[in-house]
Amino acid sequence: MSLHTREAGATAIGKAFQHAKQEGRPALITYLTLGYPSPQASLPLVLALEQGGAEIIELGVPFSDPLADGPIIQRASYTALCAGTTPPLCLELVARLRQQGLQVPVILMGYYNPILSYGIESYTARCAEVGVAGLIVPDLPLEEAAPLQAACQQVGIALIFLVTPTSDEKRIAQLAAQTEGFLYVVSRLGTTGPQQRPMEELEDYIATIRHYAHTPLALGFGIAKPQQAQALRGLVDGLIVGSALVECASKGPQVLAETVSSFRRALSQTETIK
Image (tube, rainbow, N blue to C red):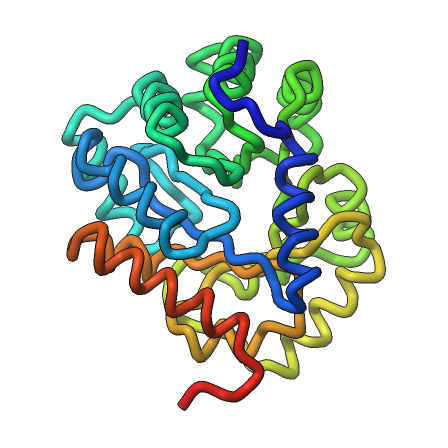
Protein backbone atom coordinates (compact mmCIF):
# COMPACT_ATOMS: atom_id res chain seq x y z
CA MET A 1 0.00 0.00 0.00
CA SER A 2 1.32 3.44 -0.92
CA LEU A 3 2.37 5.82 1.81
CA HIS A 4 0.81 8.55 -0.32
CA THR A 5 -2.96 8.30 -0.08
CA ARG A 6 -3.95 11.10 -2.47
CA GLU A 7 -4.17 10.83 -6.26
CA ALA A 8 -1.07 9.43 -7.92
CA GLY A 9 0.98 10.15 -11.01
CA ALA A 10 -0.27 12.40 -13.77
CA THR A 11 -3.62 12.81 -11.99
CA ALA A 12 -2.01 14.44 -8.96
CA ILE A 13 0.20 16.61 -11.17
CA GLY A 14 -2.77 17.63 -13.32
CA LYS A 15 -4.82 18.66 -10.29
CA ALA A 16 -2.00 20.95 -9.15
CA PHE A 17 -1.98 22.68 -12.53
CA GLN A 18 -5.77 22.86 -12.56
CA HIS A 19 -5.87 24.51 -9.15
CA ALA A 20 -3.37 27.15 -10.22
CA LYS A 21 -5.25 27.78 -13.47
CA GLN A 22 -8.47 28.34 -11.53
CA GLU A 23 -6.63 31.05 -9.60
CA GLY A 24 -5.46 32.64 -12.85
CA ARG A 25 -1.73 31.94 -12.52
CA PRO A 26 0.90 29.34 -13.38
CA ALA A 27 1.68 26.53 -10.95
CA LEU A 28 4.81 27.02 -8.87
CA ILE A 29 7.21 24.08 -9.19
CA THR A 30 10.26 24.16 -6.93
CA TYR A 31 13.47 22.15 -6.99
CA LEU A 32 15.91 21.00 -4.32
CA THR A 33 18.64 18.38 -4.27
CA LEU A 34 17.76 15.49 -1.95
CA GLY A 35 20.40 14.87 0.70
CA TYR A 36 21.68 18.46 0.64
CA PRO A 37 23.34 19.59 2.85
CA SER A 38 22.86 16.18 4.48
CA PRO A 39 20.11 13.57 4.23
CA GLN A 40 18.52 14.49 7.58
CA ALA A 41 18.92 18.25 7.08
CA SER A 42 17.27 18.08 3.66
CA LEU A 43 13.91 16.98 5.11
CA PRO A 44 12.88 20.29 6.77
CA LEU A 45 14.08 22.14 3.67
CA VAL A 46 11.74 20.14 1.42
CA LEU A 47 8.86 20.68 3.84
CA ALA A 48 9.64 24.41 3.73
CA LEU A 49 8.98 24.39 -0.03
CA GLU A 50 5.40 23.28 0.57
CA GLN A 51 5.04 25.68 3.47
CA GLY A 52 6.09 28.54 1.17
CA GLY A 53 3.48 27.66 -1.44
CA ALA A 54 5.07 25.22 -3.87
CA GLU A 55 2.42 23.16 -5.63
CA ILE A 56 4.73 20.55 -7.16
CA ILE A 57 8.14 19.67 -5.76
CA GLU A 58 10.95 18.39 -7.97
CA LEU A 59 13.70 16.64 -6.03
CA GLY A 60 17.10 15.92 -7.51
CA VAL A 61 18.69 12.50 -7.00
CA PRO A 62 22.42 13.28 -6.64
CA PHE A 63 24.64 11.90 -9.40
CA SER A 64 28.38 12.10 -10.01
CA ASP A 65 28.03 13.44 -13.57
CA PRO A 66 25.01 15.79 -13.64
CA LEU A 67 25.27 17.00 -17.24
CA ALA A 68 22.12 19.16 -17.26
CA ASP A 69 22.88 20.95 -14.00
CA GLY A 70 24.71 24.21 -13.51
CA PRO A 71 27.39 24.90 -10.89
CA ILE A 72 24.99 25.62 -8.00
CA ILE A 73 23.15 22.30 -8.31
CA GLN A 74 26.38 20.46 -9.14
CA ARG A 75 27.90 21.63 -5.84
CA ALA A 76 24.77 20.61 -3.94
CA SER A 77 24.79 17.21 -5.62
CA TYR A 78 28.46 16.69 -4.73
CA THR A 79 27.83 17.68 -1.11
CA ALA A 80 24.87 15.29 -0.92
CA LEU A 81 26.92 12.43 -2.39
CA CYS A 82 29.73 13.09 0.10
CA ALA A 83 27.12 12.95 2.88
CA GLY A 84 26.15 9.43 1.79
CA THR A 85 23.05 10.15 -0.31
CA THR A 86 22.22 7.24 -2.64
CA PRO A 87 19.16 6.51 -4.84
CA PRO A 88 17.74 4.02 -2.28
CA LEU A 89 18.21 6.61 0.47
CA CYS A 90 16.50 9.24 -1.70
CA LEU A 91 13.44 7.02 -1.95
CA GLU A 92 13.53 6.47 1.80
CA LEU A 93 13.71 10.25 2.32
CA VAL A 94 10.57 10.69 0.18
CA ALA A 95 8.83 8.09 2.34
CA ARG A 96 9.85 10.02 5.47
CA LEU A 97 8.61 13.29 3.96
CA ARG A 98 5.21 11.71 3.32
CA GLN A 99 5.15 10.42 6.89
CA GLN A 100 5.93 13.94 8.08
CA GLY A 101 2.93 15.30 6.19
CA LEU A 102 4.16 16.39 2.76
CA GLN A 103 1.09 16.51 0.51
CA VAL A 104 2.03 18.03 -2.86
CA PRO A 105 3.08 15.91 -5.86
CA VAL A 106 6.75 14.94 -5.80
CA ILE A 107 8.79 14.44 -8.97
CA LEU A 108 12.24 12.87 -8.89
CA MET A 109 14.79 14.34 -11.30
CA GLY A 110 17.60 11.84 -11.80
CA TYR A 111 19.92 10.42 -14.41
CA TYR A 112 19.41 7.08 -16.09
CA ASN A 113 22.44 5.06 -14.94
CA PRO A 114 21.39 4.93 -11.26
CA ILE A 115 17.89 3.82 -12.33
CA LEU A 116 19.37 1.03 -14.44
CA SER A 117 21.66 0.00 -11.59
CA TYR A 118 18.73 -0.11 -9.17
CA GLY A 119 16.59 -2.02 -11.68
CA ILE A 120 13.93 -0.22 -13.72
CA GLU A 121 10.90 -2.13 -12.41
CA SER A 122 12.18 -2.13 -8.82
CA TYR A 123 12.87 1.60 -8.96
CA THR A 124 9.48 2.58 -10.34
CA ALA A 125 7.67 0.24 -7.94
CA ARG A 126 9.46 1.80 -4.98
CA CYS A 127 8.73 5.28 -6.35
CA ALA A 128 5.03 4.50 -6.44
CA GLU A 129 5.16 2.95 -2.97
CA VAL A 130 6.65 6.06 -1.33
CA GLY A 131 4.44 8.53 -3.18
CA VAL A 132 6.48 9.79 -6.13
CA ALA A 133 4.16 11.18 -8.83
CA GLY A 134 6.61 11.42 -11.70
CA LEU A 135 10.15 11.08 -13.02
CA ILE A 136 12.34 13.42 -15.06
CA VAL A 137 15.36 11.73 -16.65
CA PRO A 138 17.25 14.40 -18.62
CA ASP A 139 19.80 12.07 -20.23
CA LEU A 140 17.26 9.49 -21.46
CA PRO A 141 16.54 9.87 -25.21
CA LEU A 142 12.96 9.26 -26.31
CA GLU A 143 14.14 6.43 -28.57
CA GLU A 144 15.50 4.52 -25.55
CA ALA A 145 12.70 5.35 -23.12
CA ALA A 146 10.26 2.49 -23.83
CA PRO A 147 11.35 0.21 -20.93
CA LEU A 148 11.10 3.01 -18.37
CA GLN A 149 7.84 4.26 -19.91
CA ALA A 150 6.32 0.79 -19.59
CA ALA A 151 7.49 0.44 -15.99
CA CYS A 152 6.09 3.87 -15.08
CA GLN A 153 2.75 3.10 -16.69
CA GLN A 154 2.60 -0.21 -14.84
CA VAL A 155 2.70 1.53 -11.44
CA GLY A 156 0.87 4.73 -12.40
CA ILE A 157 3.61 7.36 -12.30
CA ALA A 158 4.31 9.97 -14.98
CA LEU A 159 7.44 10.03 -17.13
CA ILE A 160 8.06 13.66 -18.02
CA PHE A 161 10.05 14.62 -21.11
CA LEU A 162 12.00 17.80 -21.84
CA VAL A 163 11.88 20.02 -24.92
CA THR A 164 14.92 22.19 -25.62
CA PRO A 165 15.61 25.11 -27.98
CA THR A 166 17.43 22.69 -30.31
CA SER A 167 14.29 20.55 -30.76
CA ASP A 168 12.78 20.93 -34.23
CA GLU A 169 9.02 20.77 -34.75
CA LYS A 170 9.04 17.06 -35.51
CA ARG A 171 10.94 16.38 -32.29
CA ILE A 172 8.68 18.70 -30.29
CA ALA A 173 5.63 16.82 -31.59
CA GLN A 174 7.16 13.46 -30.62
CA LEU A 175 8.10 14.58 -27.11
CA ALA A 176 4.77 16.33 -26.53
CA ALA A 177 2.91 13.17 -27.56
CA GLN A 178 4.82 10.94 -25.14
CA THR A 179 5.16 13.08 -22.01
CA GLU A 180 2.80 12.66 -19.05
CA GLY A 181 1.90 15.15 -16.33
CA PHE A 182 3.48 18.10 -18.11
CA LEU A 183 6.05 18.93 -20.75
CA TYR A 184 9.24 20.41 -19.30
CA VAL A 185 10.22 23.36 -21.50
CA VAL A 186 13.92 24.19 -21.20
CA SER A 187 14.07 27.95 -21.70
CA ARG A 188 17.57 28.17 -23.15
CA LEU A 189 20.66 26.22 -24.13
CA GLY A 190 23.19 25.20 -21.50
CA THR A 191 22.79 24.09 -17.90
CA THR A 192 20.58 25.26 -15.07
CA GLY A 193 21.34 28.70 -13.62
CA PRO A 194 20.21 32.33 -13.54
CA GLN A 195 20.50 33.40 -17.19
CA GLN A 196 17.32 33.99 -19.21
CA ARG A 197 16.40 34.30 -22.92
CA PRO A 198 14.82 37.47 -24.36
CA MET A 199 11.03 37.48 -23.95
CA GLU A 200 10.26 37.75 -27.67
CA GLU A 201 12.29 34.61 -28.41
CA LEU A 202 10.58 32.78 -25.55
CA GLU A 203 7.11 33.74 -26.76
CA ASP A 204 7.78 32.35 -30.25
CA TYR A 205 9.34 29.19 -28.80
CA ILE A 206 6.41 28.56 -26.44
CA ALA A 207 3.86 29.22 -29.20
CA THR A 208 5.45 26.52 -31.35
CA ILE A 209 5.43 24.01 -28.50
CA ARG A 210 1.87 24.89 -27.49
CA HIS A 211 0.69 23.87 -30.96
CA TYR A 212 1.67 20.24 -30.23
CA ALA A 213 1.12 20.00 -26.48
CA HIS A 214 -1.61 17.89 -24.89
CA THR A 215 -0.35 18.51 -21.33
CA PRO A 216 0.48 21.65 -19.38
CA LEU A 217 3.78 23.38 -20.21
CA ALA A 218 6.24 24.13 -17.41
CA LEU A 219 9.19 26.43 -18.07
CA GLY A 220 12.50 25.90 -16.33
CA PHE A 221 16.15 27.04 -16.42
CA GLY A 222 17.00 30.64 -15.59
CA ILE A 223 14.13 31.74 -13.30
CA ALA A 224 16.09 33.23 -10.42
CA LYS A 225 13.96 36.13 -9.12
CA PRO A 226 10.26 36.74 -8.39
CA GLN A 227 10.26 39.57 -10.95
CA GLN A 228 11.29 37.12 -13.67
CA ALA A 229 8.58 34.69 -12.62
CA GLN A 230 5.97 37.42 -12.70
CA ALA A 231 7.01 38.51 -16.20
CA LEU A 232 6.46 34.94 -17.42
CA ARG A 233 3.14 34.31 -15.66
CA GLY A 234 0.97 34.55 -18.78
CA LEU A 235 3.26 32.50 -20.99
CA VAL A 236 3.14 28.96 -19.56
CA ASP A 237 1.13 26.77 -17.19
CA GLY A 238 3.92 26.27 -14.65
CA LEU A 239 7.25 27.80 -13.69
CA ILE A 240 10.16 25.80 -12.27
CA VAL A 241 12.51 27.52 -9.82
CA GLY A 242 15.64 25.55 -8.99
CA SER A 243 19.13 26.98 -8.62
CA ALA A 244 17.94 30.07 -6.74
CA LEU A 245 16.30 27.87 -4.11
CA VAL A 246 19.23 25.46 -3.82
CA GLU A 247 21.44 28.49 -3.18
CA CYS A 248 18.96 29.79 -0.60
CA ALA A 249 18.72 26.44 1.19
CA SER A 250 21.98 27.07 3.06
CA LYS A 251 20.17 29.83 4.98
CA GLY A 252 17.74 27.35 6.53
CA PRO A 253 14.08 26.32 6.22
CA GLN A 254 12.51 29.60 7.35
CA VAL A 255 14.37 31.74 4.84
CA LEU A 256 13.71 29.14 2.15
CA ALA A 257 9.97 29.15 2.88
CA GLU A 258 9.92 32.95 2.73
CA THR A 259 11.76 32.89 -0.61
CA VAL A 260 9.30 30.38 -2.09
CA SER A 261 6.45 32.52 -0.77
CA SER A 262 7.87 35.55 -2.61
CA PHE A 263 7.74 33.60 -5.89
CA ARG A 264 4.19 32.43 -5.16
CA ARG A 265 3.06 35.99 -4.44
CA ALA A 266 4.69 37.20 -7.64
CA LEU A 267 2.67 34.70 -9.66
CA SER A 268 -0.53 35.81 -7.97
CA GLN A 269 -0.02 39.55 -8.41
CA THR A 270 -1.02 41.46 -11.51
CA GLU A 271 0.81 44.66 -10.58
CA THR A 272 4.44 44.62 -11.68
CA ILE A 273 6.99 44.03 -8.92
CA LYS A 274 9.69 46.71 -8.86
